[in-house]
Length: 274
Image (tube, rainbow, N blue to C red; front, side, top):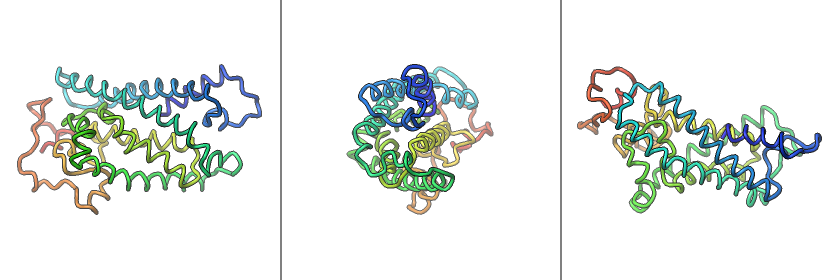
């Protein structure tokens, strides 16, 4: 998302020739013509995929799991699903901003209202609460038989995911748990589009660390892939709604497929198997 935005800034600065008095928002956030819609769609797809490959590669580089044939096979399969997911998400975002957002009450709100620290804190806090709460229940919804059988099964086919697996899922899953919630929040409160881009990037990093399974997986989401019925989202939500991992409920532990000596290792990702 951040890479996509920087790409849009670079292209717009060079090609579109906006008048000097045009606001920053009009230059880089709002979509006023179909040509801008197509341009930003292409840039967003390209930018999100490049960002995905770069950021996930960095996390995978520092992940202690051996880079063996099975690990690379998992990564390449995750990428095949991931790029489709990202392209669909970019299309959904640009379609929202061009066809839907202009008809909502807070469209271009901060073109005529001050945007400062207070507005930023309110917006970020609302995004966090809104996505944490409804994101948890969206995930639980996907575990109902119909939705699991038709949508969520793809993501859970990666029982031992890598960082690349955060978006390796059915396009509708990413839309339901991410894109839809990010943008409906903008229809409830006045939220600056730049803040949505920032929070989307934070959300991406959170999901990457959750599927990387190493020391930054603060939600212990890796165990959700190992055991299926636990750790659906934020630890607070899991504790309150009765879905945290409890070792005594799983006497038969998952086995690490990537490293047969995993029980001797001390890194955080190996400890999730014990």
